Length: 100
Image (cartoon, rainbow, N blue to C red; front, side):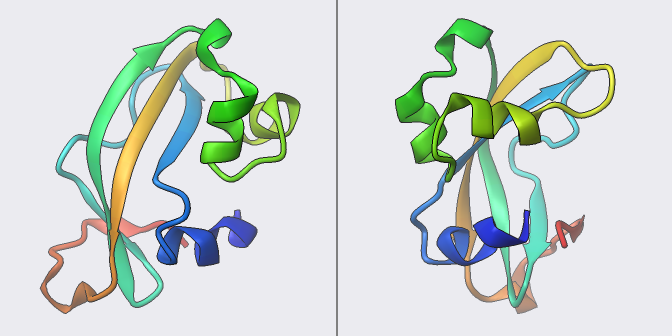
């Protein structure tokens, strides 16, 4: 989502919840975002019950319903919590692909 880019680059958002069949990112993976990149620091399988209002706000959403509208991709049923760090300079990133 474009509205999440600026808060990610300000390091206000440091995680994402995704519902996939299998992970689409890997720990240590670097993915371009604007002039910089995000680096995945952890990915773990969680339950839907663990998606709380606090986690939704931490990942840049107003609440759980708002997050779940974006988190579901295709036919996936596995819920993943992805933690990441934003790095402003992509020139030395080795970023694998763009998130844009």
